[in-house]
Image (cartoon, rainbow, N blue to C red):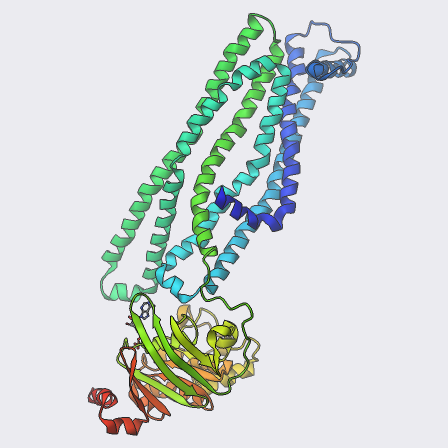
Length: 608
Ligand SMILES: Nc1ncnc2c1ncn2[C@@H]1O[C@H](COP(=O)(O)OP(=O)(O)O)[C@@H](O)[C@H]1O
Ligand SMILES: [Mg+2]
């Protein structure tokens, strides 16, 4: 119930619909019970047409006489309106029954009508909250989770919640009320019979609850597996080129089929367990009815303490309990199933963001003096990648980071942008610890261009607008010109409105990179971080991109991580890193003359 309560909080904005649902359900339950009672005078007409009808209007005495009063009242009305014409009386009673059933169903629809808005509203809001949280959570959260798992949670788990959890809301008022009203009617007809029958209900309840026992665990496994196969699918779609190129279709097929066959096993077990519920409860219900027939039949035939038409109406009422009772027992399975889904969804929602802004975080505008790494240490997992690392990047200067791959260069970029938090030390911008700034204002100062240009399936313009959503078309084109990108866009039939495909795959690597530079140009931040921005390019497009980058770095403070050393010779300081430590730093010529690590790196590259 703990998860259920948490999910129900999401229904709060829709509480008016819940009220509508409850009111409609009260009427539904009432008419549902009354419609059976209305059958009694009809049966009387059929079976006891010779009997003398009450000619005098009956008088209400007290609650114990209620049943007789209601019966006699109906019979009297029939008598008055039908004037002892039996077929007319029959019509009248049938009309009454039809009207009651019609009302019952109208209210049943109304109740569902209202709850639909609530259910779909909760679905919508849950998905929005999940998505927002996904965008908000730090990168480290996702390196531990598979993408498919997240997708399964936002997609199918939320649906499962809507399907199984919220369907309970539909029943929560209606079914218990129907049962309550029906039992009241049954007690009115015959208290003795009702008490006898009710001894057997807890026994059936116990048997049914046994079946639901292991449902949550089973359902949990099914949902997890769903995540696994979505992950495989997601990876496959992303890596189709490599899968085909390496003839790995078979291997991936196998992996996928492993997952689907586990899914097959798990969901067979789950469904078969679930399917047991309905036949079991139906059979138990009929067993109770059989007991009732035996005991009630004797009351009618042997000691005559009940009349035939009342007994038939009573049977109808007893059957009327079966449907809601079944629905309630099914709801208890749904709660168990929904619990598993809710747990997975709430796990994301309730994950504490370790990179939250401080309560009175500073909003910083502009950049005045310097960026300073002061004795920082950082580890992703167990091993320190950087230890007691210090470096200062003064305003207006270009600092280049070089060194073997794995020496921690990209990690430094991840730390300035605060994608990860350092374990000790401080990163200061103009003497303010970046942990004291809002993430938004920190990242507002920074422009990032990485090795793989990350573009989205949208038009060129919309991709560039990420840099500044209010920019005009002219500003977008100017940015594209600075980034040397406009020359190829000019010739496209739709210009800057051309869609660039999934991940920008309709463009070449160099073109994509120039777009991502244009995006940074449009943002126009004081600090630029370039992480191997030209490494993935061929020499020709590298030169185009390099020119674009030089225009981008003009009048800015830049941290340039470079694989190709030819691109950073003009840097104000070159920092040579090795295993998370600075081994040399200085200008290009000075470092060359030193014949140390930098010299080695340069000679290695010019040889190849
Ligand atoms: N997300 C991550 N989780 C765990 N370890 C990581 C992660 N990213 C990088 N590393 C590790 O950190 C070290 C430094 O990586 P990185 O900064 O990317 O090197 P560089 O950019 O200099 O090639 C490497 O040993 C790498 O394995
Ligand atoms: Mg790197």
